[in-house]
Image (cartoon, rainbow, N blue to C red; front, side):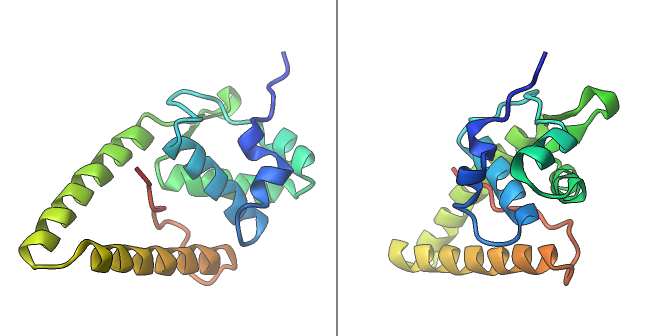
Amino acid sequence: MKSPIPSWLSTSSLQEYAGPPVVQITSAVVDAINRADAASGDRLPPVRKLAEHLGVAVNTVAKAYKRLEDWELVEGRGRGGTVVSTDAFRLRDDVRRMAASLVRAANRAGIRVEELHSMVDAAHERQRDVASSTANGLESNTRSPKMRE
């Protein structure tokens, strides 16, 4: 049975993301998890099949999957393929709790919501810069992605 390529991993969908293909693939998977388009236990396309579909090197997809494994968002199961981890959803819950804690701390510090948004946006931009640098081999590839509500 053929495993279809999800629409969120199509060539046109990946064009929404800046950076090299490895960053585009990892970003698409993270966003699919955030939107619940990819659920715990869902299988990602085989590395070779996705590489062929996207017209990229097999190593590119393998690096993206490895990065997602390092972030504990997916699990490699050998011949069983790569599946979305149950930890991915635990991480989302952790981020929700951290966000609530951040809002409480900001309120106590008298930080307005607009200022808090600016701080979070700036942190997000720095993380995207790190992800882009990582893809270019300038930093360690084990940093976690920003998980969205």
